[in-house]
Length: 254
Image (cartoon, rainbow, N blue to C red; front, side, top):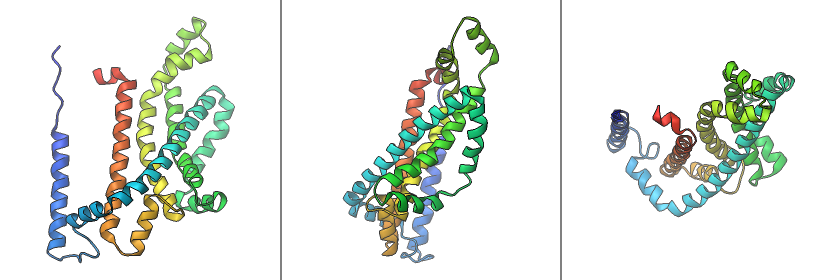
């Protein structure tokens, strides 16, 4: 069977749209429609990024470390809680409403409290990321577990399979799509959560750097760190996509 070539229209249009926006941005700054101290040009942003590159890389390491630690702990905790909620119906009824309720509290309100309780080190940042990442992973995994075909469950049960074997051979493979969909959201939440937490209290990290340049009205550096945060989020999402293809090779064939 002849393999259908992949379309590159989406990438082409995305690149063209991005270049068009950068061109319009440069024209607005060059013509003085908006003062450069309020909206620096893309060239000024690139220059600021080059000048502060060593400092940005230092703060990026701190933010990336916090993001990865919180992401790993939050994902593991979310998967474990989803397994227990799927296995114990009473636990699911008790915990699930609390998960929903926890998402009504804004992270900006939680971050100062965590800083007061745990200090200005890495711990409050990781805790905030865990709280942010835990919910989408737990809910998505639980939805994946509950969407398993009942006939497949009855088949394995008739063959004498226990709960661990059913989880390994049916429920986890069936929930991988939901898991990676949640993980793509979680990686962006992790980076944003780390930056927000650093913004409200900390000594190092991109959020701290952002606060310092904002107070000194260096908006070219402000835009530089914003683009760097977006790049880190996109890089982590690409890594998730690669992991998804490795874990679900049948999806690529389909």
